[in-house]
Image (cartoon, rainbow over all chains, first blue to last red; front, side):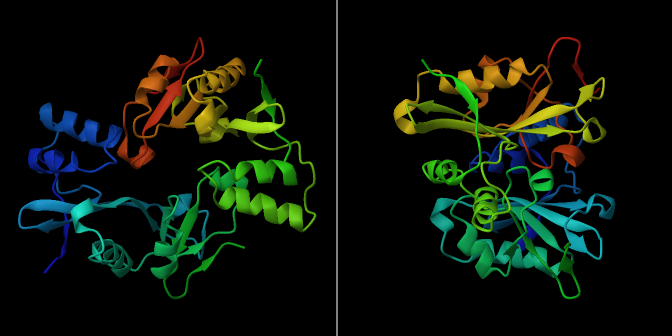
Length: 155
Length: 155
């Protein structure tokens, strides 16, 4: 039975992250912070994941964006930016992505993601909708959003 | 001899864009604006490209970001966000990506890009450097920047 856990940032987690395609400056920066003892077992990470026994097999990050930066929702409010949603290849088609996204929805704030090529069908199935594209705001991104009850899109 | 052109947004350009992988909400929105006569031969597009005869074979978008949103550079200033850099497969390894990025550099403002997986070597070769990652600002992106003379990174 799979369940979503908030990830602690420690050497094991960073080692687990190496199996995921999207390993970039964020992970390198976390590794450096661990190595220089700035953090250790940091519980305040933006990452959530799913384990199979002790192997991390899926993850996402969720950044809470302050309402003062909200340019998407009515009323203006805090929302989550969902990134780096990824399930390791042997674990695909087991609804693990759905489990992670449903967890994010359970936090009851709007969610915004920058939908990747080929992922539109997944986001639509999850109840997300594309925004009305605004060049100045969206600058080439593909923002898909999920609106909790009582929330609408700006304009 | 290849050269960089600013692209007009018209039906031919949008048709050309379909050959590129990164075709998303931005392109769909431009197509809708054309179809509803909101724009026609719009010269104010963020896209630059390279043609081989009349075929578009490479493109990028450059959005000018107002200094009031600058969280990267000292002194604070307008900068360009470079996105959707892409060369069609038969035209790779002909330095067309380099030609586009050099064009962006010739505008003499700092440039920020969100480096994709596997592209770090290219950006380094082009004189870009990774930023000092800040979770709140960078939210999982991989920002690489190019600094013109007299410009430094914040902190």
